[in-house]
Structure formats: C-alpha cells, structure tokens
Amino acid sequence: MMKRQDLSHERLVLIETLNKYLNKSRSARFYYRLQILILAAAGLSYERIAQCFEISIRSIQRWVRFYRIFGLEGLKDDKKMGRLAVLRQDEKLKVRIDISHSPKELGYPDQKWSGGLLKSHLQENYGVNLSLRQCQRILKDYRDELNRKEPAP
Image 1 (cartoon, one colour):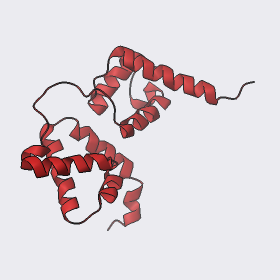
Image 2 (cartoon, helix red, strand yellow):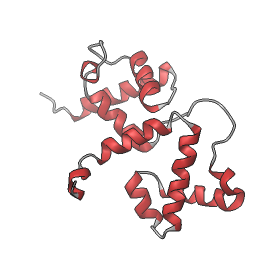
Image 3 (tube, helix red, strand yellow):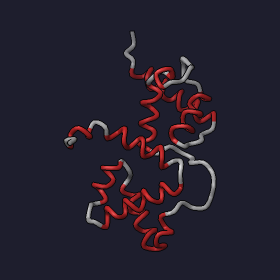
C-alpha cells in the first residue's frame, strides 16, 4: 500500500500527464471540468481544488458560472477550431524547465534549442501552436535572463 507521501513527489509528473491528455481532446477537457465541479459540489473550496490541480481559481469560477447558465453544455469547449494562443502560467514554468535542459536530454537529436525545435516541442508536449517568431522570442528572453543572473567577471 502506497503512503500519501510516496505520491507527493510524483504530483508534478501526474499533473503534466493530465495536461498533456487534456490538450489533445475536447471530451477529456469536458470530463475534467465535470470532475472539478463534482469536487466543488462535494464541498471542497475553489482554493483547494485550484491548488491540487494547479489551475486558477478564476477558471473554476468560470466553469461553475457556465454550468449554472448553460448546464452541461457550459462545460464543453466552444465549437471554434484553432490553436491556443498562449501558454498558461504553469505551462510557461514547465517550458522554462524544459529549455534549461539540452534538447538531447529530452530525446531530441539537436544539441541546442532553436525556434523551430521549440515550436515542435510545444506542439507535441503542450498542444500549443506558437509561431516560429514567438518561439525565438521565448528562447531569447530565457537566454537574456540567464545572462543577467551570471555574475560579471
């Protein structure tokens, strides 16, 4: 029998896996939102739910409001197609962790991150389709931040 603490170190991996699957399927996102609402209806606070799933309280409030107005249809994604325009805050942190490693460490043949490689990585792992220029900007911002942190000789 696993102890509670045995899973605590796996939490980030579990949440990453959940987010990976949520980004691939509208029905998965619907069931996810439905489960969040069940937890809220059972009396868990929005704050606790948000903390457990690393989502914003605002998202939970929005899903509850949509459910109250539209019923189960309110939990479904809009019919519109297209890409997610931006990374969520938790995804930005994970991307920063990803690009702090060499691409080789993540299973890519490349030695160094490029805009094109980051674009492919984001599509494959986060379901986000950013432009090449946006990906180049993310890498530049990351490198600029590293340079600011390094002490001058």
